[in-house]
Length: 202
Ligand code: GRF
Image 1 (cartoon, rainbow, N blue to C red):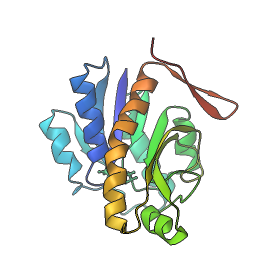
Image 2 (image 1 turned 60 degrees about the vertical axis):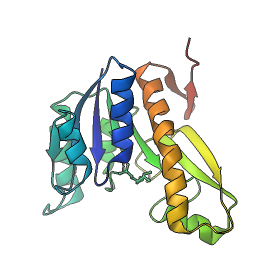
Image 3 (image 1 turned 180 degrees about the vertical axis):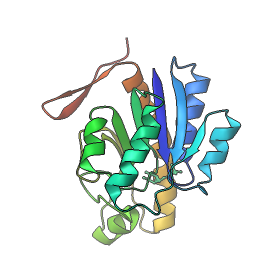
Image 4 (image 1 turned 90 degrees about the vertical axis):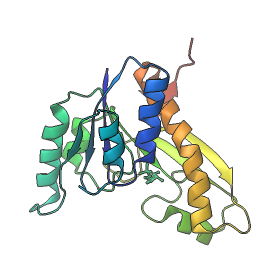
């Protein structure tokens, strides 16, 4: 099996998946890490790991679809079984999403369906929620929607700031994403009536 990971920045979720794959000896190749930004810090880690680190610049296109077509072409050179979005800050067109239906996942730093979109930690603090967290989901054409694969909650503390919340949520994101990717790779995920079922490991 093979995985392509898309990033736009730091890439700590990508790094967690790559490290787990190596540590646990997954029978899976991380075929490429692709960024829409040449200055994404995560690219350096991919290079150090001898993973092809590819840049498909998102700037300068006439429309979203033009970029998505180029991106799709690049991704499909690696024929991935799974496309992992890890801090990939682009809204994808329906055609692109359709092409990877059921084999593209994303991590979002909130307990979806609460707080989709940007500034999730700010939204959570403004709403005064007492629990917050992270969600891994299959990607559909609606932003931060799609069948939920895994979620984990953390308690919001009275003195939390956007930064402190982001930091604690990120800590739970890494193992959560690794588990979700591992279950996909193991063939333990299925979608039934729009909901994800995860079979236990035998
Ligand atoms: C994470 O919080 C992720 O949930 C969100 O963007 C952040 C990316 O962090 N979509 P990193 O690039 O994986 O370090």
